[in-house]
Length: 113
Length: 112
Image (tube, rainbow over all chains, first blue to last red; front, side):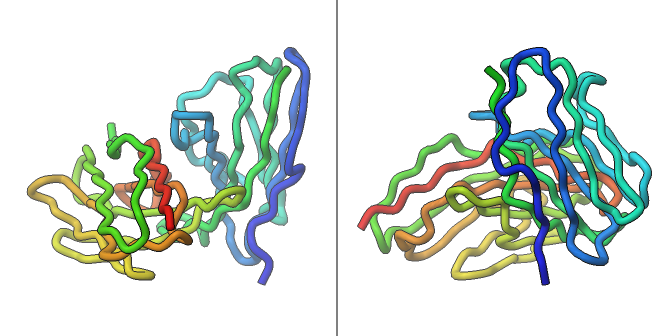
């Protein structure tokens, strides 16, 4: 069974540009979670999608947005990139609301220069 | 709101030493508690969990007991190996309908 896959593995962008990160959940999982892992700050919750809807949002500005497609894959968009957006972005999936079992991908390393 | 506090790292131990990584939490109600591990260059993997007070989660020689009276979920292992070198995260959720809240992580280095 394929795990959670994220693409690209690495992404380098210039300040002010937009970044798009992608995530494919485990087959059968309907929930996708996005976390930001910046150096020294642990994992900060960004967004949660389930069945195509946004269920919860962390304390991040509106330039962080995303969506979930009918096949449950998800996209995270970061507009007007700032240097402090440089981080590892992790995606996780689960079997949906009420499920405790998160499976994480290996992440996308975003570097803003 | 919910929060998790972990001991600051890095923690450096010799092989076969005893490991304790402290984790305390603040949450309403009765959260479920988790330990995740992140090996270099990889995503997070669930190590163990406990869903109610006095439950003990265990896996791969690691253990943690859910202590409601002290709001703690300390991770322990009796004899660490070099292969245990990783970053360990404590996490909680109040229910399956709220996302996991993580601590800042504790880096463990085990030297031969």
